[in-house]
Length: 296
Image (spheres, rainbow, N blue to C red):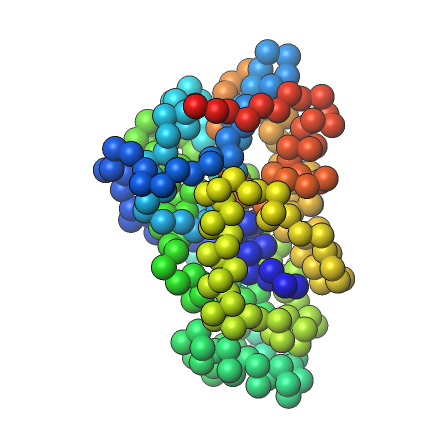
């Protein structure tokens, strides 16, 4: 569990409002964008690996991405993050998905050592220790992740910005999952029976920020294979299976149907889903598709 937070940033989308714009004509930094063309039988789709954090200096996107998006009939992203605050979504989620039972607290699942670490980390991350007691473990971890982002922003996450660009080109958006589905996946990973182990592994605020800056640096430099870790314990294996491998299998089936339809789809999903033996790129190749990285 040495990269507890980076798995979440690479594989699961957190909701946040879109406030950034793309007024600048050229990006201030040269991002090695992971964009691919997936082909079979003269049909194809575009695939962009994303991270859910970023900086303003990464944008606007290069012409190759804008042109691919304009060619496409649909943009497909993981979930409707901007819809999390609307009424329909709020009605679909009940408090049992976020809160522990009324007679429970998070400390009920923690050893004294883990309690001490939770208290210390809450102070470091500027989170209210008492408030954390009422929440399920998955939501506690989400709060720590959001509080540790530092100068990197979800407003400049690649998935958010590509959605924004699609809107300017009037490309409609489709979603692979509902926000509720993603929450249920998180709940399967971060169960209260694992709380003691997970809480003890929450990194210091300084280490969390270092990991996320390293993730950001690897992304803009195109070091995507370095974001794929082999699970080193049972919890890591479960986390990787539920958040990455199982979802990849479902997604690839959908992607193959997109390609077979003859319409052009532009798909943007977390870069953590692309690489590795069970990654989307390797699966496409095994299934007889041609995978080409798009250069300028």
